[in-house]
Every structure is written in structure tokens, then in C-alpha cells.
Length: 241
Image (cartoon, rainbow, N blue to C red):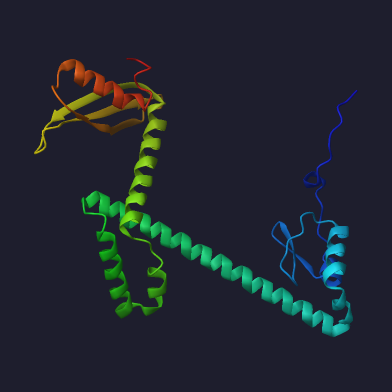
């Protein structure tokens, strides 16, 4: 006996009927069916659900008939479209401001400048915009470049670079390591480990795996253990070691 399968409404491929717009003031926006009077969304695009919503809350709307009803529905549709366009525009501006924030944070990181310089860069952009393109001032003010924001952006970028390197390292057929130990003005030794790997498609990758801080004596065994620790996050020591 075939197993009983529970019917899913999503699999029924229900089609929205445009006549429902005139009868019950509902309209389809992408995959949603929206009431133009209260902007609520119907959970399921069933005629019974739409009719129940309309008759429960907006029965008085039936007093509008003929051209008055058509004009009112056209006005509601236009208002809803304008609202949707505003939300889309705001979302696009937010995405652009976020992207600019990441780009500037990356530039700050590469130049070795302190994180609070983000505020200074923002003030420079706004000042220049006020003279050259005043219409862009409002958009530039949305770019987040506070010290903690820049720090968080750089942390996200660093994590993404680490993830990309881990993905490439998982495809290495052969690889070699290069370690360099040095000490600067602080007494703690610093160990830099680089990897050069080649994939089966002969893509060569050369990147810095990480930097370790070593306290005490930098013996051969200590250097080996720190190198193993840095390589463990990229799953290199479990293969070919």
C-alpha cells in the first residue's frame, strides 16, 4: 500500500485571478498576495481566505461601485506600488552604503592606519560632496565608518579570506610550507608560516597561513609545534604530513 502523503498547498500551483482585485481589493506582488487596503499578506492564495478577510474587515467598501470603485482601486494599486518602490530604493542604498563601508575598511587595513581614521575619511567625503555633488551627501551620511564598525568589517573580511584559503587548501594535491621566525621591539618571537600549494587543475596558491607568537625559547620542537598548530585550521597536517 502506498504511503499516505500529506497534501501541500505550495505544490498545487495556485494561480492568482485578477478578478479578485476588483472584488476583494487583493493584488499579487511577486509571490505574495497583498490586501491593498491594509497591506496584509494572505497566507494562502485561496479565494475563501481572501473573501473572508475582505468581508470581515472591509464590507463597507462594497458601497463603492462602478467608476468610483475602479478609480479607488487604481489609486490603491498606485499607492502600493510607490511604497514597494521606496522600500526597494532604500534597500539598494543600504546595500551600496554597506559595500562602500567594507571597501574603505579594507583600504584602512591595507594601509595599516588606525581604525578611528574611518570617521575622518567619512568627514572628508561629506565635505567634498557638499561642494561637488550636494545630492550625494545624504547617501554618504549612511556609510558606517565608526571605529568599532571598521574593526568589525576588517574582522569579517579576514574571516572570509581565511575561509577562501581553507577551500583552496582542501583541493591541494601537493603543498610546501615556508616558516620565518623573527623578533621586533617586543621580546616575544613571531613565527610566520606561508603555504604554496597546487591543485589537480594546476592552480597554484601562495598565501600566508598565519602568525604565531612564541614565548620563551624558540627551539626546533617549539617551532614545529607552532607550525603544526597554524596548519591545523586548514587541515593540512592530516594529509601528506
